[in-house]
Length: 512
Image (tube, rainbow, N blue to C red):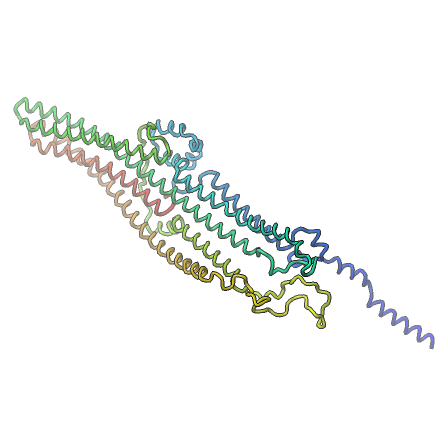
């Protein structure tokens, strides 16, 4: 009997020992276990030792990303003018002339030698005051990134200073409720996105200002080139009329023509002299315009004009339409404005309307000493309320500024319609600019390659026939006038082609 009892006791002890096997090690591992930071509910000692919790870590990530964005924008603005390169400024010339941005004497010395369109564009991109003003606006808006983070830093410091004042209310060493955290980390990211959209919009406006300046440079240059070429043509024509005057005088002395021929040639030479004075004054005005765009003194002397090259062909409008919709800065500015309003509406809705989650996993900063079905208080919420304590709304902005939110939504909808309208208008502007450029290109080819040789041949033949008395004086001077008009027309069409092609690039938003 004793043997049976001993065996039974041994079996019982064996099974009991199995149930309690290595319980101490398991208990120690359980006490040492720490979940990931994003889900951790640390004891009070951990809270005292660690200065930042998971929310602050998340917030610091948002703040660091905002600071990185700020630094990138500042680097792009203070670095090379990449936007000017996309607008048609030669990158190598821009890098070579970059010292002239802060040295007006160097820029003045450069244009005293010759007037080169590519160099003038680079100097204007570096020195123009309108571009500098637009860049300063972007730099000023970039400081809004610091406003986003500094406000939250101030609120955190205030919460740290006043934390000890409320140590008799509620538990002493527990985390705050996640609902009471201010600001919610997601709002920091939204505010950063709003500022980013605003900065991007101002960057596009800076590009628009630069694009307009470069188009003004093109217009002023081609106007000056046309005027300079017209002056040279008039000088050549006056020399031809002087030879015709000598022929008319010789025929008059020999009695083969009347003195009226001499008078008519003399009148035509006097008219050309007067046109010459007008063109010289017009050339001075064109130089003043270029100096204004380059932010140089009006008394700066400029050298001769170097003729710039013109495009021999232009792309068809069907290829230009998608390029214009992608690169036109006016459309990009509206898109960034839409993005800004979308972020504003989203932030307002987060602070005003209930979220999609019921918040049942939120820890409400209460001590949890018991667990299970008989626990007087559960660790996490089991239900959600329509309102907070004292019948306060769940969201603090509930019912507040609803008209402003509706206004912002309507403004956003209006901007979306405006974007569609501007895109359709861009298509029309591309077609109109292409039509003018194509027309000027065809007419320049007509006058330069077909009409000018014919007028030159007619001039040579009429001069010889007038010397022999085969044709009257009216036909001879008509040939001279036609030759003059054709050469002036070629100069005019060259200017029109340069101006219209610059306008086409402005509409498209990039260099073609």
